[in-house]
Length: 245
Image 1 (spheres, one colour):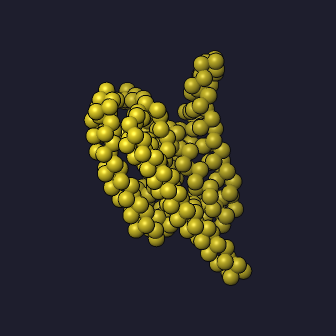
Image 2 (cartoon, helix red, strand yellow):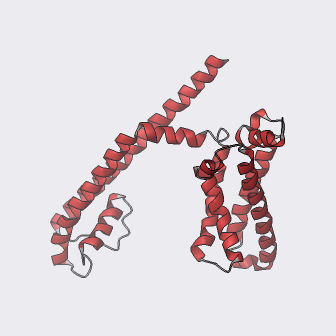
Image 3 (tube, one colour):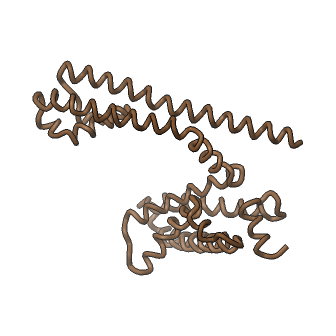
């Protein structure tokens, strides 16, 4: 077996390679260390260790870069297509902020993108099978999820004008436009309710109760669909393994 084939097994099928699990553990350990350092370097009380944190970040980026290159190299063909898979895009976004700073491009939000590296931990779940499981669920239930999303938008854009015309007369300095009222509708529908906007009229409060109740219902429905499908997939995989044995 050549070097490229060994790499492919290590990254894609680690349990079938002698050192596969060992290399995977090192990768995940590197991810956890990088996330921990990212949080610690924002603590001003630890300023004396900032130089150390910077060195650890350099090592993390070096290891992430090597991993990214080796993953591409392990593919004998369709490398371009592989580059645009979800996890490879995450890997690239993790590396992007560091290499942009080399060219004096240091945007704050790009540094914040480093936290995306935590999504690489999903590779650990059944060794890169979890993402396929989630994608299958969304593909199978796409019509149900699409219907729920459309229904939510219809309700929000129906209730927003009603609340606006009722509340804008009572408190014009709060419900200044339909767009600001839409913000109220979204936060109420998601049961967040920041308290920066709330109706004071009787009709407005009745509509708010209606929106809040619908929000709870519409968030429970997709959650139950997803949970049910996930359990079905897990049971199906378990039965397949039992039949193989």
